[in-house]
Length: 155
Image 1 (cartoon, rainbow, N blue to C red):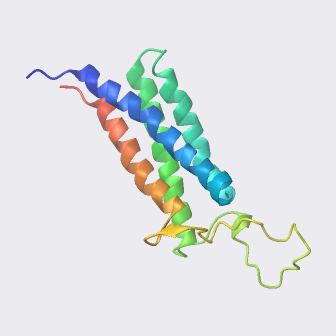
Image 2: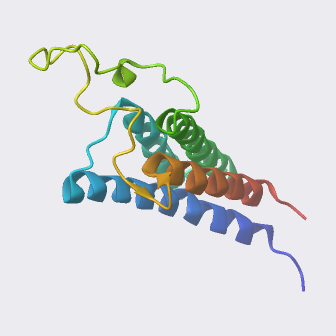
Image 3: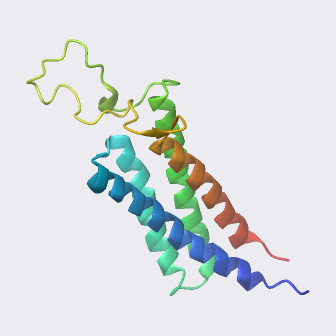
């Protein structure tokens, strides 16, 4: 059986659109359907998915499709790495780099500028001890790597 390199590019291109669309969809269902509003670091994870979605769609109209698809894969991988960092902050493995991990002790509850309303260092929901940021890390890093591998593979 002869290998068709175009088939890998097509698979990668489909993943480059479906993965960020599904993860962004899940984020918005969590936010508006279940009241799990995003913290600052959650937004950091969404931005690369927005970019990936645009890049993945561009791969359908601009040439070479492999380049646009690979860029989308890199964006998805970037979101996953940000998600991994965020999950580490939630699990207490390391400190966050934003004000959304400010300690609440000694904060005047009427001073709305003193601490964030949505904390980055507290996972609002987990499944099997994996937070939403942790799931983004797992899904995005595997998907981003798969997209890059498929886009680059030639025989």
